[in-house]
Image (cartoon, rainbow, N blue to C red; front, side):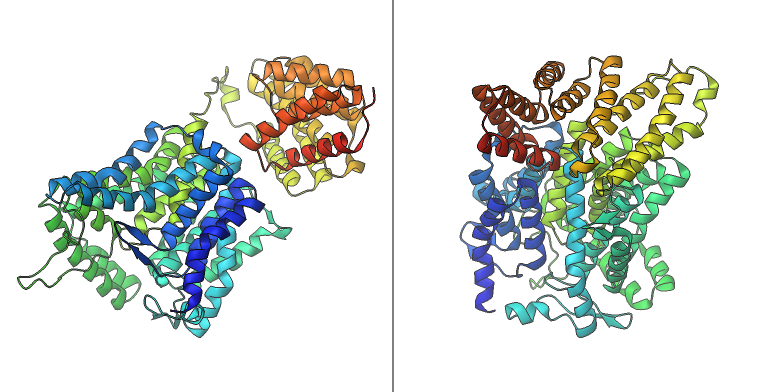
Length: 635
């Protein structure tokens, strides 16, 4: 162990504070968690009465301190929800377990604090920072970028042997293994199994984003090629179980697409609980799985699986002696002979939880991890899972589910997965159930409509092209969608969905024509016509009034801009920075400097609390700041 270990572990807190000082809040959280997990050393410092200070605690504590210093309002806005009950029960379970075993309150509080640092803190941070669908997309992209960052290190170790941790930090960890004709890389993780699981989850996440159309290019590069390279690296990590989970994660996409049923997702959801119940209760021996692995993979893998199953049987029998709250800490869940020698190997995290915290602990832990997937299965039909907007929560829910299945055989608590669990739980809770569509009035409308399908495809294409910075192509796609929605609305005036999509398209196209960064591609007069069409037919919609107000501002009609923006604020329950920035600039042009500064200050405040890293708002704020600082007001 060299001095770099102490430098990295002790320096992670100031480094995290630096990240929070220069990056937007959510990007800082993603960066701190992923970089910390990928590159911090596998070393720890013992602290009396507290959990060891190591990479998990260093990441969570540093992000918590940075939050308290830079963004305390994020935590102040957080409110307990019913979805937090399973995680709260799991974190508090050591107290009941300790008292039930006569080990005292202090021991229970100490173990509870450890659970809070390992599980509770990343869960809370995920809930606090990620509250919208676009936030989950940012987190999902961060996942995949983390895999791309790690790919060169994995390739190097698969060729040269897993020695990077020893080269950098001066000591080796875990074990190096040779499988299928090559080394199993581990880079800065415990072993090759943990690394393989990380790499396959980044591939599954990237695949769902790419296949749904949510992410086609990354930093200007074709994402499909990056994803293919990442897939190759993940397979070269040579994790048999990880490759199986990779297959499951990708196959679920096609199963939902082909069957158009939620049944495949329900099967995946129930796999973990089914295994826990049948194995702990002795209803299933699992020996058939070992025989299958022997035929499909090789005898060595089958023997390894058989050892796990035998140890699980012994540990489950010991756990059932304390079925409710388990044996508590200090290794009391393990099996010893009359001479005190440990007879068991605790590979799976689930059997550790069952033995330590009993059925209460295992149930609360399982429910917490599976809750997002359960919400998705209950609320959304199969086609919705593949929608670009819902692809991030779908993918993250699946990743967390796959992680729980991995915990059947392995015990690698990963702070990034727990952060993602808190994030997706918060967003799905806020999102609420989808609005019910009115039934089609005739049998002909219940049948799939090719024109509607075309409109939806062009809508999605337009949004994707806009995100890729291709406004001309996005405009053409939106025009095609508009023509289709307009025809559908004319042919079926009693179906409000068609009219709403048509007006939303008018607004989206007007917004594109007003806000594209290239001023030469803006078309203000056409945007005014589109926005006026929308507000005339749906005057109750604040979003349409906001677009019209910005259009009038771009046209230099300050009075009309103010009137439309005030109508937007009144219709939208108080307004947003999309209104406030342009109101401030319009008042400035009219010569009312006090009102201008007032509205821009309000815009800054709303933006920092709600959308601090929104690309359009960042441009609007820069424009307003430049105007108020560098130009004299004029009427």
